[in-house]
Length: 214
Ligand code: ADP
Ligand code: MG
Image 1 (cartoon, rainbow, N blue to C red):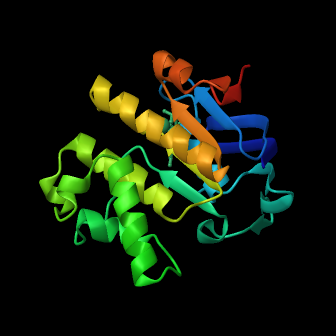
Image 2 (image 1 turned 30 degrees about the horizontal axis):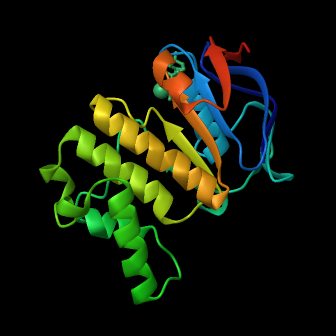
């Protein structure tokens, strides 16, 4: 479960996230759609622990992870993130970027898991390329695969399909939803695109000027 109670974050005079309360149940897939600048990325960064709230409380499975005087570090939150910009390790190949996120697996398990993820995100042919040798859309797919690689309980996706062509968009969306279904992961999916939000389905919320407006 992901729970926010009256969470706010301002940058100077800009109220990026303004008294947001939200509850996402375990295994739920929730989409937040809103225009550029409405505070979506800041909300996701707050949940991930990359920003700290000015006010309010964030809890994951009933454990407080962010409060005004408390912050659990991002890597201890059991969260996989796909950033708006792909942020791959430039000195690692596609396969190495994916394997880096897998902890505590034997070589054989890691190989099998890598194979499965490469298939899911349609990257098998590009496994030995470096990020500088990938198109923007290919790098996005690596970022989605990498977020899945650690099998997180919670997956936060910030505009993961922007700049992909429609066919790949469909395939990758299916891969994300299948992942969520198979692992029971809780998913928060953020997009400015109304049509994409409809396709992800499940629970849909809208964000405007730092607030969830239903
Ligand atoms: P969205 O992801 O919906 O486009 P953001 O969360 O990125 O929105 O931004 C919300 C508002 O907060 C915008 O007005 C943006 O300019 C501002 N903002 C975001 N991050 C920062 C920052 N680090 N410093 C100053 N302003 C920021
Ligand atoms: Mg954003």
